[in-house]
Amino acid sequence: MMKSLCFISWTLLCFCCWTTQAEVFTSIGQMTDLIHTEKELVQSLREYIKAEESKLAEVKSWAKKLDALTRVSTSDPEGYLAHPVNAYKLMKRLNTEWSELESLVLQNPSDGFISNMSIHRQYFPDEEDETGAAKALMRLQDTYQLDSETFSRGKLPGMHSSALLTVDDCYDMGKTAYNDADYYHAVLWMQQSLKQLDSGEEAVVSKADILDYLSYSVYQMGDLPRAIELTRRLVANDAKHQRAGGNLRYFERLLAQQRNELNQDYQPASEEPIQLGTYTRPKDHLPEREIYEALCRGEGLQMNEAKRSRLFCRYHDGKQNPRLLLKPMKEEDEWDSPHIVRYLNVLSDQEIAKIKELSKPRLARATVRDPKTGVLTTANYRVSKSAWLEEEDDPVISRVNQRIEDITGLEVDTAELLQVANYGVGGQYEPHYDFSRRPFDSQLKVDGNRLATFLNYKDEPDAFKRLGTGNRVATFLNYMSDVEAGGATVFPDFGAAIVPRKGTAVFWYNLFKSGEGDYRTRHAACPVLVGSKWVSNKWIHERGQEFRRPCGLREVD
Picture (cartoon, rainbow, N blue to C red):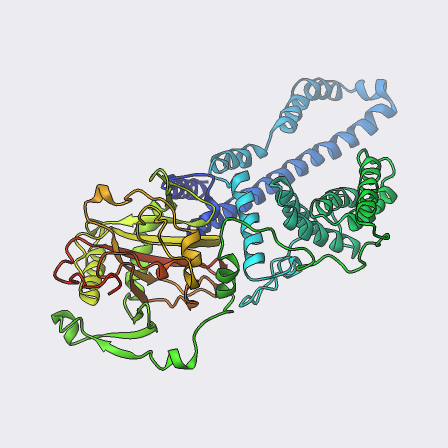
């Protein structure tokens, strides 16, 4: 009992550190606490079952003893009661022992389990978390062009074990999409649910329910012939379905009107099964969506032999910095223009472990700055949790900050605090700029590969005015974990993808020497397909760099 109480206290301590609820899915690091919670609940469930079995065994013992007594007593009641001891024991049994049996039956061994559940339930994921996790799977499905069956059978890259989705799981995925008016994904997941049900897999959900959602979602995707065919299957499966008959007549009338207007003959529904690619995914807010997702898959990379020949590796001593002279950093070019470099062995395993330890209790849903109001808010295009660490938190933070200054040659006293981020289920950060942009310039040229810049050139207040340190001149990004699949840092404007490697860091300038923003540095963190991605970054600001990185003579120096 004491062990259970200690565990509960430990779990509560961990969860009380969480700064926000209903966003558990946004951090794999924090989701690991739920694994321990579930283990504790399973143990509590086992104890409840054992107590129930013990209670039932005792009741059975009572029943066996009383059954033997009543067989004797009912055979000759008067003769039985003629013996004074039997008369006494009957009085005693009915007055005392049956009351004890009643108390035993009324005992509720579930009290401990229910109490344990009540303690943990307040920290359980809620409906928002379940919906967020479901949408994360759909995001992964889109980005990495994986069909529903790949997920259903757990056939993910780099995974040797399988985590299967049942008919009911697929149905719930489809329903989540349907409730969000996302009929594209509703079709894919309802079709997978139907496929598994037709193969003989057991399920709670009925075939009629699946066909109901699937047929209407197909109709919403504009495929009337197939919607009619699916609705006819629904009617055949459940002739009394409250909507099927009306929907079928409505769909058939619409199709007849279309054929008359277009003067077309009847075209039967395609016999090809619905799968990834049957319907076109609707466009969304991100103009470079296709380029971004292709880069995440490792497609469309603009690296070629000519460009590769201009990339080098070298030892970097920070312009003879005393701390780097004896142990210079290994520097590798990742891209030539804009110049992006990777430094090897920047963080040790011990430093990474300490940074994770410090940040985990402080992790909160990562925010973005609203470009119109300047207010920090959460957004679906940034799925992660972050924490900010100061030098006073631990000497390791001071050492890391000093190391970044030594490597970059830039002043970090005016930089932002070290930000640590952990990406959750399908964690990502869609294409964005690290620097603050100026209001839209109507004279900006929009030819060539600057079109994406034009389409995303938003009015944005000076996001860093309150800091008094100018704009973000550079980004130093530490990778604190390897990622089994996905999670690359990509630059859609020039087609680069940088794969996370634990202990390394990448560095680039966001601004030209003139202080003008380099719009080519628009970048993204691809969704994590398999694994847990940890990063930390330092955003270095303009103030303090006047003599370390002097202003250039041209706008784009």
